[in-house]
Image (tube, rainbow, N blue to C red; front, side, top):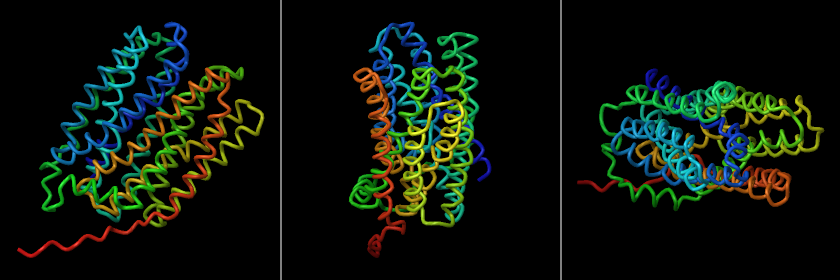
Length: 394
């Protein structure tokens, strides 16, 4: 179990850490290329959508053939996407590299694939805690990588910084050996097929409610992660405030995700999820109501950091609790698809409405309303194992 946790945590640290700082590239790339913010935002929106669409397929492959091969492919695509992102000179090429390639890479190197291995190798009574550890590692990667990426951009230029990150993404490959399972995950004795598992999940109301809540999670965090640096600069705050803000989100996310995973062993996970979404809305309203200063930004970032990815361990633990672990990577991928549809809309609407209105205000208030809705839809989720008919006797 220790090897799986350590290697899985380090993979998530790299894969999530690299992508967390993409907002730092918005202004240098758009200014040098002469693009609008919508051009950059659309590519990142496509990245999130492709990540979501590819997630179930990456999960199917990981469940059937093991996570190791999927992680190797994800690492190579990550490196290639970052290099081509630096070389793209048109909006279409940038969307293909930063959007399509990096989206596919993240589908094969982040939570859904890693959590499937954790779910099969950790006892049920420790599963939520273990998922919290992996999520906390991803949060630490966000805290660590944002100042590193800002330093790389300042010292090497934005293009060379992406080349360095491409080399770093290749480090996922040796770590993948730590998640190499002795046999393919899909060789379980269960007679349930992939198609039956998908139909069962989508016909179950609680699965659909989890997907609806995760849509909101994606909308909120990706809008803030990509557009907050530019929002702060638009209001006259120096660039380092945005860097510190993203780093604080990553730092406090370490505590939030670990706490959510640990609490998931003791409290109903639906209540944890509802509280997270409601508190996000309260935090955003308070942030918008107060005067914008570096201190208000840092406090908001710390609070949002605690709530940032703290939805991930309880959501995936509920999926495992309801449906078991045989197809956990695939089902987690479907839930995450909903998250990424929300991410697409959050990041794209941020750029679109900014270019239309000259302000991010409308999107902030959409994020508030969605947070309240997500708090409500998680309350009816049933966490018990789904009742399946007993197999017929031979």
